[in-house]
Length: 173
Image (tube, rainbow, N blue to C red; front, side, top):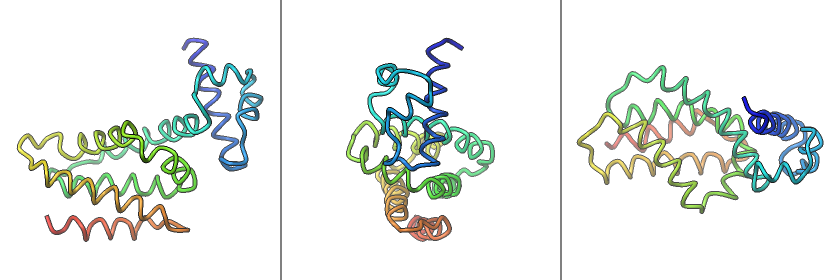
């Protein structure tokens, strides 16, 4: 591991610790750099802003959830695959809802951000479907994402309610 990678990792670990202890809004980049033992300028060499740090922290943790979901995926029909991944992802999003509310409020209208999430879900749900209906696929993914956004908008997001809502939506397919 290079010095750059070690510093990057240390920033993410310290930032996550501060975010979970104090909250995103009450954690400054100066606090993160101090806890990481680096200058503020070095912090900004690794990340463009505090939201980018939060995004990287969540992505790092999300990768573990993604791997567990892939390991247990035995489904073939897209609607069952979608529900399978939603169980894992919605639970993770609800667990970290206060951070995702911040992240989505900052990045939701970024086409790059949207496309990354759409591409991920598309690859998981339709990868083994060489002949899929593109309109149906888009509608299924819209159901997934709109349920996610609506669910995270609640004061206390509820994974079971979100999954039930998604299941009802996709049952028409």
